[in-house]
Amino acid sequence: MASDTAALERERITARVPKDVRERLEEAAELSGATLNQFLVQAAIEKADQLLERERVMRLSERDSKWLLELLDHPPKPPNATLREALADYHEATNGDPNRAFDWPTRPDEL
Image 1: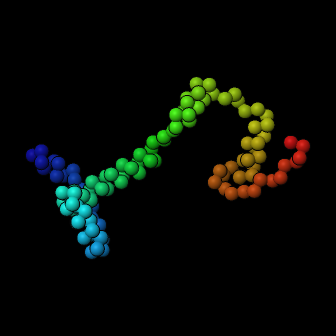
Image 2: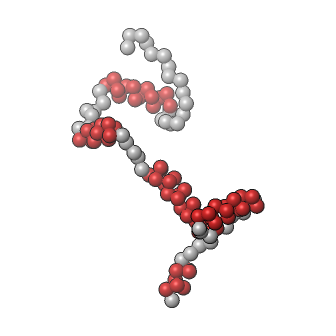
Image 3: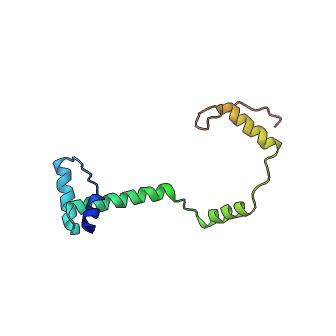
């Protein structure tokens, strides 16, 4: 009965590929000692793991990790008036859309 449950939990994935691609995959599977299906599943899992790790894990150098931990332990002071004004100018220039391209207006020389 346990094998019936395991069989029910499996899903099928199909893919259509050109003949030369299939032949290439079959050759690689044979060289690795796996069936074509085993080879494809393992290759897909490896690629998925790489992509998921790249998207989920942030790697920092020793210097950057120390900087981040220091920042977390000692957060910066609240923004001063000049920084708040710059942020307001930024929001005005982008209309609140951080993905919007824009040209900064020229600032007076007295700054």
